[in-house]
Image 1 (tube, helix red, strand yellow):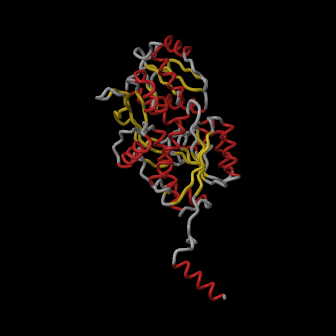
Image 2 (image 1 turned 30 degrees about the horizontal axis):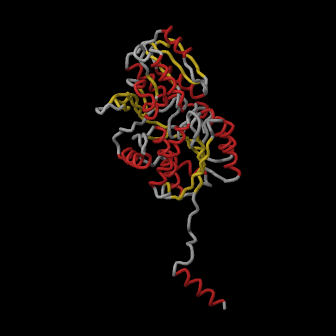
Image 3 (image 1 turned 90 degrees about the vertical axis):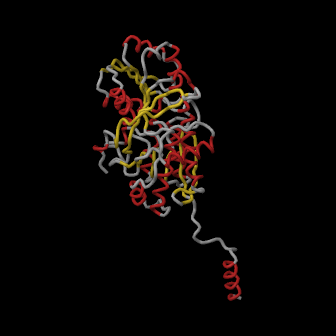
Length: 390
């Protein structure tokens, strides 16, 4: 009888009736992001860019099967914290990503790191986690908040603006934005204002700008805030009198499509643009255009790059995430082709990369587009890396 059972098992295996014992369980990745509210499209693009990389890999990242669990934090810190807690306790997730806003990251990321899990940021890069508050389980694929705006300060120098008025949303990323701009800008600060995250009317700020009479305005108003700011800036008659220089969060492809002429001639800085001529970006743009039929933003490219970075680490560890140190060492190699071109991690596990000048211009067919004009900074890291000690 025992011999019959053994023979039957052998026959079943030969005929393929038995599932292979080595079948790999998908690695779960918790993607907490903002999918609703004024900044909802930012999280949607991060999610879609991330999932695009998985789809292009046949359901895998780095050859490892993955399962992405997505939830909406609604740009609310408390909600992000609750989702992370549930992912950690109920789903036993070890890899997290997705957060758009720095205030949500500030409430959520510490719990993830304290639990021994890994967080890989596709967007928010607050200064609080970049220097003395750095952590070996925390990686940023996008940029450190300040460096994003340091590039705008350098562009203002190159454009010859002698005085600039500064406006930013009043939260950690907004504070980092003004610090970053001022760190590199060599001219006079004509004035500065902080605005509420729920603000819809900027008339008071425009009155202050008029009174200050600067050569240019720098503003950090991401997502829906930026749309309102640009429209009202034109309606207030300031667009043609005082030019604007901004970093990418204040004017991306979606914002430009919505505001139209209000965005024309605005000078922008970014680490990525849809017209970048490298193989990785061409592959990304072709797949994005085919899949989503809407403009790609740098948020989408960051979601895609973040997926590739995680995939490179998974490949390096054979899909294992329990050994966090091994995963970290694999991540640090940054063994993937970024859509932005040159990319590596600095000593605080934030990017070292190039920054470019873009400008909103009309194409030959009369449409508006962000065109790359030239490089501003090469192999640029951030001001906090020197204070990071693991």
